[in-house]
Structures are given as C-alpha cells and as structure tokens.
Amino acid sequence: MAFMKVRKAVFPAAGMGTRFLPATKATPKEMLPLVDKPLIQYGVEEAVAAGCEEIIIVTGRGKTTMEDHFDKSAELEASLEARGKTALLEVARSVSKLAKITYTRQAEALGLGHAVLQAKALVGDEPFAVILPDDIVDANVACMKQMVDAFNETQSSILGSEIVEGDAISAYGCLDCTPDANNPKLLAVKDMVEKPKPGTQPSQNAIIGRYILTPRIFEMLETITPGAGGELQLTDGIKALLQYEKVYGFTYEGKRHDAGDKLGFLKATVEFALKHDDLGPKFREWLKTFPI
Ligand code: G1P
Image (tube, rainbow, N blue to C red; front, side, top):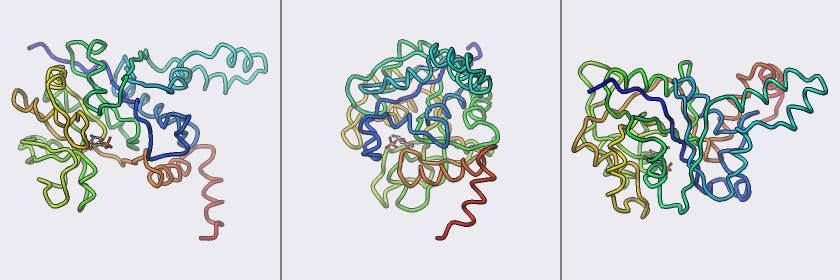
C-alpha cells in the first residue's frame, strides 16, 4: 500500500457547551478566549504545526462567529492599515491565512461519532487528524505533530492517551492496551470502552481529544448504534475498526487542559497568561501580591 500522509484535520465543534453556561448561551464555547486567542485557534495552529493543509470544522447552529474569525476581515484590515497599526494588522491577517478551512454542519447533536461522520465527503479516502478543541495541549512539540510522526512509522490509527487516575477515568474513552515492544510511546490497543462505570475500567489509559484515523473509520461510524449516554460514540467506531486494523494509543509529551470545563479553563488561563510574552511578567508580579 502507498505511504499515507495526514493532510487534513477535522474539528468537531457543534456541541452546545452546556458545561460552560451561561457563557456559551450565545457564544460558541470554541470561541472562548484563552488569554487572547479563541480555543479553536489553538487547535488549528496545532494542526498546521503538524503539517495539515486542510481544516474541516463540523459546526452547528449559532456557531458562525467561528467562520468570521478565520475569514478575512477587509474592514478591520483597512482600518488598522489607515491608522498605521502594522503589528495588529499582522495579527488580524495571520489568523485568516492560517490554513484552508471548510465547514460542514451537524444538524443534530447525535454524538462525537456522528459529528466526525459528517466530514466523510470532505476527508475522502485518506487518513486524517481529529482535534477536540476543548482539549488544549501545551507542548514543546505540538501534540498532533508528535502523533503524525508516530503515524508515519505505523501507518495505523493513533489515539492520544494519558493516565487518568481513579474513577475520573469514567469521563473518558478508556483503552485496554499493552505497551508496544518497539516504541515506548505506543500502546497496542486490544479493546476500548467509552465512559466505563467506576470500577469496570480495563486500565487507567484515557483517550484524549487527539486522534489520527484511517478512512475505514467512516464505514464503522455508519454502522454503530447509540452507546454511552445514548450517543453515537467515536470510541465505538474505533473499537469496530479493531476487527480490521491495528490501533495504537500514544503517550504524548505535554500537558493537557480540559478547557471545556470552568475549573480547567481557569487553570489553563493562569498557566497560559504566565507564559505570555507581553502579559506574563506583569501578571506574575500581580499574582504575587494577590491575597489568597
Ligand atoms: C470525548 C470522547 C472520549 C474522550 C474525550 C477526551 O468525550 O468521547 O472518548 O476521552 O472526549 O476529551 P467528551 O469529553 O465529549 O464527553
């Protein structure tokens, strides 16, 4: 079989963001700013850093500000240019030049597996990345780049994975897996389960919101039935894929933040603000004086 390259990245972004109400009543959760960039931009930048040339965003009702964000804003650019604000002009321009982005809609919130299936026609017959924009991974080498490098070796589906201790694993997809004999970062997956009931988990290896999937996943997603929470689960589609192909877990280097959760978002905000070139030093000074 010819060498397969990951050129496309799918972003499921149709969810209602109920964990973040009321902020997400009229604003897509993907547009909440982490310091000065909306969450989804971090994910798109990660995909671009991994070599993806095409971004496919699966959206839903009330999500059009995402499209405006990545679109060229002629008015804003003209205004910044006229006022000689070249640095800001560059910031505005760079967002719309990040990548080729296409949008498709998920008409009903039937689950993550259903959301990914909506990208079938746009992805076609090639492997692709999936990035869940709630999961922000802070890493020296972009998490998806690390995974693409692993995919280039294995040419098999790869799921970002980390250890989640105790019953907290019940909020995740969970892998039944063994360490790969050749690559210490890879886990050979035998089985998987979405949101295992506490005490029934096969391991503490959680799936995080980073995937590289072979195109056969679409056939699997077309046949799955509602699973955990009554939703069409991506995990169930990947589990079905195991009958035909190898699937690996991947222990990435970096730190993940669950920015779709209020507390996770606050922690990510503080960490990213402290690392920010302009704001970091001043924020650090202020934090030191803040009475806790
Ligand atoms: C989804 C997936 C789950 C995965 C998680 C990672 O769950 O269904 O397998 O572990 O993302 O963030 P959700 O967070 O949408 O409930």
